[in-house]
Image (cartoon, rainbow, N blue to C red; front, side, top):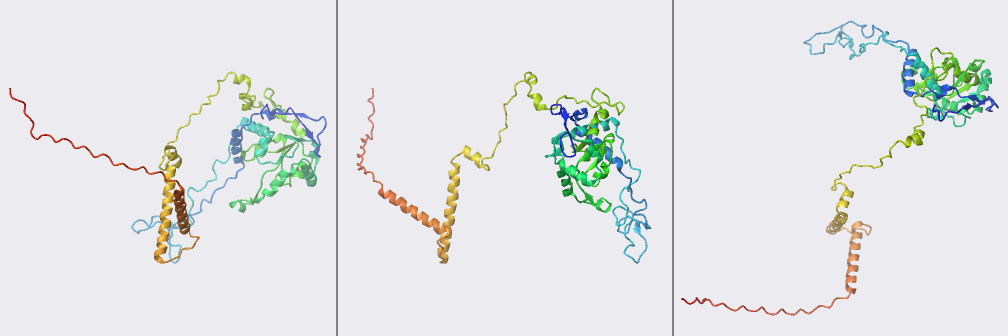
Length: 422
């Protein structure tokens, strides 16, 4: 959890959802541990493999028949074939993974490396990160838990809850602390598993509900174990598989007061080593405050940074005006007029063709026909234009005067006088 959002004190609530006066607890240091989803996921993947059981196919499967290849020259594949005759099975291919009734390719062996060893420090750091994430409401809600009505996160209840030994009392407790809606989510999610797990005693699947972490079991597990989705965990045996199911951070956790008190002794702090775990200090985050928005807007950082360069250089798009109408209109606005004129001319030709065809066939088109309407509108417009031109005053016509006749050029003497000889 970021130090900027870490709450210094946590209230304790009774089983009736009433805050206990004067029983506020300081927030354990483990809730300030760095939240590492990458580490939690990798450790969860490795730890979940340790519960697998070895399996393999029968080593004789696919080979429980006598078959021999026919060799070459028979115009059939060289795969071994079942001996004998008198049945459909004889002559069929056997043994190969491509054959019906044959063995699988690379039959599975029981000596596979099933389990994984995980470093102790990695496991402890992953558990600390999962506990810290359970105290961030945003991460808890992002995981799908319904916590809008609970008093606060992390939710700590008094140790009297550990004495509940009846499921009826447990349901009343969950309803009072407003956690029952998260259990109803589990009820609604119950469904049949997809795949062959239905045949292997894994018929139904459901979502995860609240996790109750206690210190001493005084009947608590018997009361809550039959409610779907609810899991119980001892604070001394914190398990990453339950704190972060599926490797996803943000499990909704209900802590008892004694279990919450014990977290500092289990995990310690950055400077104080753990009292229960040997050679373990809480992982210290690289950043004391992970709120980057708050950091980058602080005066100390902004005064040493240069002003942001807000000049935006965008690449110009080269559009083809022959295929892009807007580009063509920018280059030639008159193209819109030409385009509209072409559409109107085509409509006019279509209407004229329809009228001519109807006249040729002797068909009278109805008044609602588009060609008839267009022809009437054209005649009406022509009549209106003629009427407007008739009302327009005519300009006086100037008399044309005949141009003066062209002057005849003087005829040149055919004989040019020669200069007198000296």
